[in-house]
Length: 623
Image 1 (cartoon, rainbow, N blue to C red):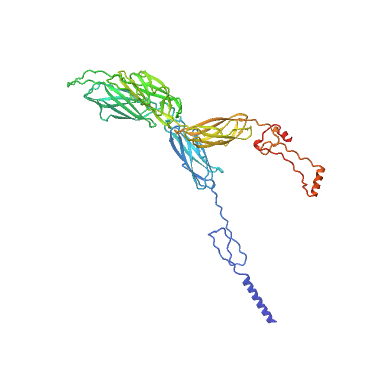
Image 2: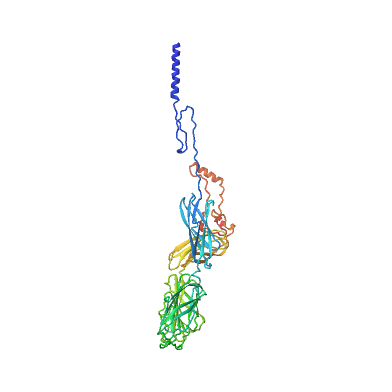
């Protein structure tokens, strides 16, 4: 018995040991981590008890939202009055939002942004053009600063501003056609007696009779029997301001064979502030003593020459502004004899005189005035020839004349010089010519028509409607148009502005505007289209259209209304079923026929476009 108990104890111990060996193995447990955390490495642990799990919470990444940058933050540019200054601002989206609004503010000059809003992906960039229109009447040096504000479109939490300054630097070159130019003339000279074979100084005074400054003034002297000394006959004044004078002394030398009056030709070339070049040519005569023998004595003067006349155009103006190809216009000229002598038998030649006849020994020329070779390529006379006789013009006399001209239909837009010559005789009968040049501006403005591409009917007070507008290019060439806007007093308009763009010849652009009239009767519509002309001046085309608006009918005249607000008519009431009708349906059910109750017949609803607000419509439908 004792032996059996020992054997049983041994077996029990072996069983307990084997259970501990097979049912409690070494366990390798790894802590539970977040997604691939490289800072944590799996560590084996020997344990019998349940192992606690280690956890890792990811750190959230902040969303940058609306964040963008602009460049440059400030800029300054110059242009002439009547022109447009364009600034380019680069916008870069540094956040996750994809929309940025642009707002432009300026005190009184017109400014706008193109485009007005941006849609940029993260990291993308785009350019915004800020335009500033300098008015025609802007003073020299006047400036305005445009504040372009860029704002995040979501919550407006991010705002950047660019300060852009536009400045007017020169007077406009396209101001109303007139005397807006310099005019340099000889205001006087020393007519001392010249001795043959001797040196002398020629003193002259030059004056700017124009309304603007003359720049780069260069004077050239030439003569017959009289020769310039020291400087080759060329002098420079530089700048001669409007209304100012400048005196010059030119060293000269007289030839030994010089006899009689000695003519000297003085040519003056200069430019205006816009760079347009002008040339004036003057002829002065010097008194000469006769030279006799070797005794050195000089005879008394053989005679003197009277000062010459000088005819100039002091102002000009067109009755049409702007001039366009094919148009007839009147050119008004103001003329003045700024010389010190009378001009006789004055003839004005439009386009320049081809000849003035011959003048021999100071006697009057038997020939007439040559105007057949005039340059009339762009401007041609109407109603009379290009030669206009002004009779005699006394010294310091002013006169006015008008010319009827037409612009050639083939003339392209631009600034064109028109030469005008004055052919006349002086008091001695010598034939003289004074040439003048004026400048005329030719535009080619777009010719467009605004109309409805279909009839507008059924507009009612308080009811929404549609205006089917169409812009058609009637010109002979394509036109680039800007924003088209529609406005009306007494109506609410939506979707009433759109960018037109390029229209080819005969092309059209359609534009639908939503309208809700507020009053009945004839409703005028104002349509405006902006564009830039050939000289970079902002212009506007305005046209007016009319539509008829009807009064809305009273609600009790319409009857029941459908979901769209249109009358549907009255719905008939379902008649009650009698006992015999119910019995008949019961019998039909017993023999297998259709025993369902009859459905109520609904009235036929006409299409929306055929529904009209007719008085008594509900009563008609009931009948």
